[in-house]
Amino acid sequence: MLPKTERPRCVHTPDGSVILDIDHGRMFTLNCTASVIFQLLERGLREDQIVEKLVQTFHISEDVARSDLTDLCQSLENYALLPAHEN
Image 1 (tube, rainbow, N blue to C red):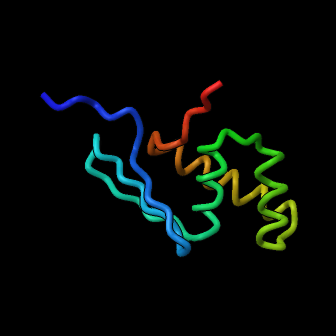
Image 2: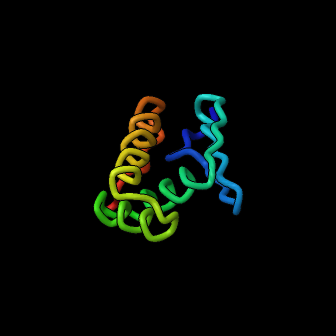
Image 3: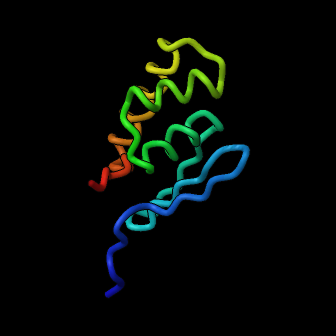
């Protein structure tokens, strides 16, 4: 029996990311904005820190940044892909 992977594999490029959920045989693609959010989640940043970084990086309003973060987190949670925070 093959060992269960601890978390999905993720490859980041300047154009976005690809998440490989090997355990379930699924692959997901993320656009540039979602890729940045995913990487910040992987680093364990708080919601307010992620929103601030999105506002600075993409020159968007705080409301748009917060909405993008919320939408992505809901999608990731639906597929059990939300990065775990290690403290």
